[in-house]
Length: 436
Image 1 (cartoon, rainbow, N blue to C red):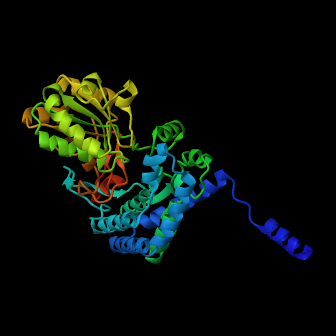
Image 2: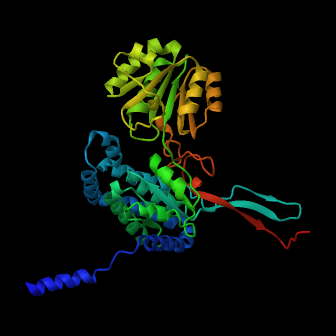
Image 3: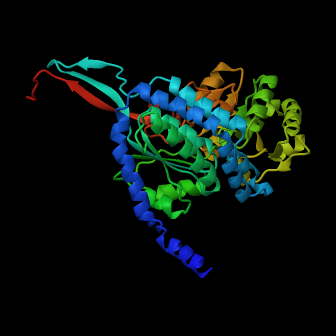
């Protein structure tokens, strides 16, 4: 027994100690940067073959993914207040199939790398043009949703970018397994090692160190809640494209078709309430409130939506709960809806400007002039007329899978597909021209 104990002790001593956080993150980022030049010049055919292999691997290893996800769900817990986040975290056979289908859709899309829309000739005879090139190394910091791992890896690979993925601690098992499956399949298909880099340490210090790696990482894309956005804004030395909260509104105008309004509002709120493009606030013109609200509320209640309304809403709908001031700027991510009856379109636009997050806003109306005014005056990454906010999505817009919905104004805004993951460089074709 003493001999066995001594051997066990020796093995413990021989186990390598984990690298300090700074060294660990720097090493990952450095290797990613080294791989970026090789990936940037990879032929489209090789990238597409890798994507198809990645999709197939997800399906073949769905059992492993579900087992890892079950560990995360158990650790996360089932408290009622965690319901929305748990839905984002959960994987199912269907969702894994959707992840694989999304990757296959990316493989079908045109490769943006090398695209050159036009060239022009200057008076001295030289030709000037712009060509699309990869951004380089993109750090993606996100929470909860494991599908982001697959979407991000696929889009970055097709656009020639290395991705450095850092998911939330609540999905560490799911994300680690997905990233390993994707990376192995991609490398077997000819993609350089490190193209899909996953940060498999869950401690918060890792994020702060990652945000300082401006020597190796070219862009940070965060996807998550207010606290994550604040952390990144305060600590990043790398340019950031924000994918912020979705406090989305639908305004039902005086000339709205009531059946259309009801269908759009129920879809926008109840189809999948835990997403950033779900409706969180409903604004209704006072002239149609009395006729619209009872039937609309009945449909929302049938979908288990809790109504929190202004005083006039509560008068019309006795089962509605009084809304607080905070409810009108809140991203519920759940079957809860803030409702306000407004005097006119001016009040609706003013309310959206005050409480919206510039993500997705919609109007339901039959009046062309007011529809055009809403499109012009409302500030958001996507503004819709007579359509559900849930449609603000890369796949729905024909971009293929998206890396997220940018609420930033610089570089990209709205769903970020392949083209948004590239930048341009000038190329010049000369014949000996000199500057006079």
